[in-house]
Length: 169
Image 1: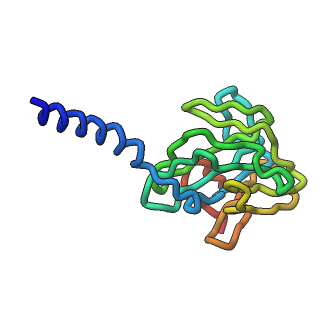
Image 2: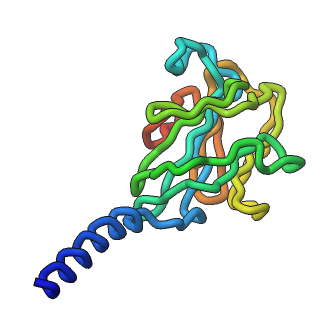
Image 3: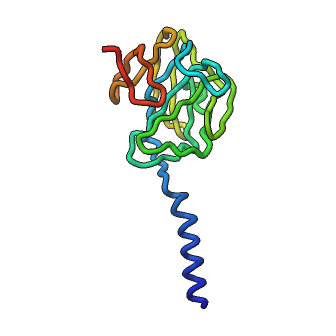
């Protein structure tokens, strides 16, 4: 009976630990993929507002826990928003609304800063280490800036929040 209880206890412990470890902490796999600093009517948040938005993409084949990842609009304060426990699925997209008011729930993430349509930066970091960033100039309403490849970005009037990037040409 003791052996059975020991095996049962071990099985329960493994069942509890394995799902918690299923998502990796490979934060280097997370990229800024697209953003819009002048959202007119491309996408609305849960409040019906046309907030600026930033899209992250998980480049890996594994789910990634974003806990501790930081998002900012400049290098002076890299930790303007620190992600809570949040699993971004393998090859998944995440839209973050830069609405100026921090609000996190299971359906939507808002950060307490906005993007300047006259230009600035979007910065992704972890514990003070820069993981990804993009500097941009003047933005047009409802035109996003999207990643073409690892090093190149392009403006597009075909924004694709939550999906693979598309371009005009």
